[in-house]
Image (tube, rainbow, N blue to C red):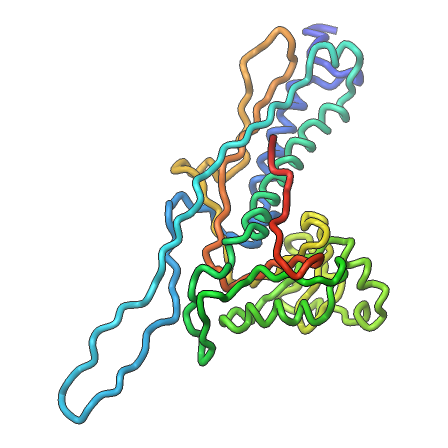
Length: 321
């Protein structure tokens, strides 16, 4: 056969062709919205701060004279977005691996695993922001009033429940109340680890409380690949092992409570792939780079729950070495 046999897999597929497939896979991965950036953050931004509108305009009582009320601007507060971090992953087919025998399926698996690693990284970065004390309200800020609900600086959206890892209906209702009292009553969803869901599945009343599949919220969740296990107090409950065991998060999907910050170059919104220069050891050598950071910007639009103590404890997530 003409050409370089070293560029073929054991089943005769050129490595250059397989590399093109990996590039296409990365492009499709970047085009999809089935990740937590799309679900919680919306479009990535290169801004250093987010200006968030709050409810603060108020009518004044006027007298019978011609005194006019003072002009009020729309109240806003500014949130400094976390600095983008850089993460890299090298994917390679070594000459030694080729000589031992690699078929096309094994090479394709390399690309799939690199893309899966990116999804794990992005999801854990966003979860780390939500499951670390200080993103939501955490006894440090005084929330603005909503309707006739008033709050003080001890208000906390990191809730601990001493229930031995088994969520109760009361805990979910309390979490929901913490969000709705700020005006984020629409599009609430709750994510729990399968360990917590499996305890609930033994309760027939809970399991039969199925979510309304035709609702706009559930249809949006289905677009992201999530099917609710059931619902409680009107909130779809989703089993998701991205959430660590003994933890749960509830948030308003419609509010987009976080932002995903990138660098000034818009290309950093994507998983970036670089082909490394030739090396005597490698047939194919790609470097994958992810840049970004998540920040909670609507601290009243979500709640994090810990089901193993009445005192909150930050979750420990495996982000990167």
